[in-house]
Image 1: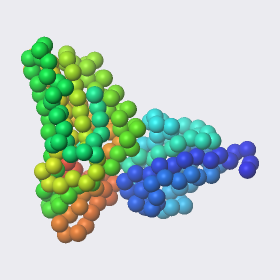
Image 2: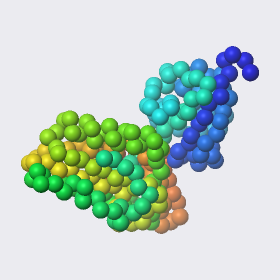
Image 3: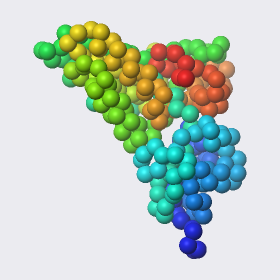
Length: 84
Length: 151
């Protein structure tokens, strides 16, 4: 495992859960930021939602897509919300 | 107090904890699942939530509410799971000394939670189709809650 490689946990909800076919997985990545990680995943799994449609949380808090990711982080890309 | 509930809200004493002697006004909002959206007949609705973050964000909204308005107490419960037409999807209750604060606070809570809570809903239609609101059809308003567009 090279120095840039980290293992993160991903949770999926709603449309992303259906498109991935999983509600959670661990993933090994060299992406530096949450935004880079989404770009990787979008291409790999052919997600239909673009980054502009999403929000992202790391370890249970909303963050910016520029957030640096670290080994062991729990990352969730959140589709447009529709509560109420 | 904010909570997600897998249990039907109809089975829960929602208002009980808000009963207090110093309250002069209680405003409640009840959001129900309705039977049509954007010209399609809806048969049922499925709610999914990122529970940890939804509870954190819901609690934050209620805290903001007590700071912005003169309210004695605010409470909100939101359903998850598969709901049928007419089921209660979300409930907001606010008590205050005077009515204007309770009305304003109740509106603030429902408006904010529709924008901010990590909760998603999938509509199932009588024709067999289904879709995630605002993901499969980004412009469509939703059938839950008060039926107002989410954005």
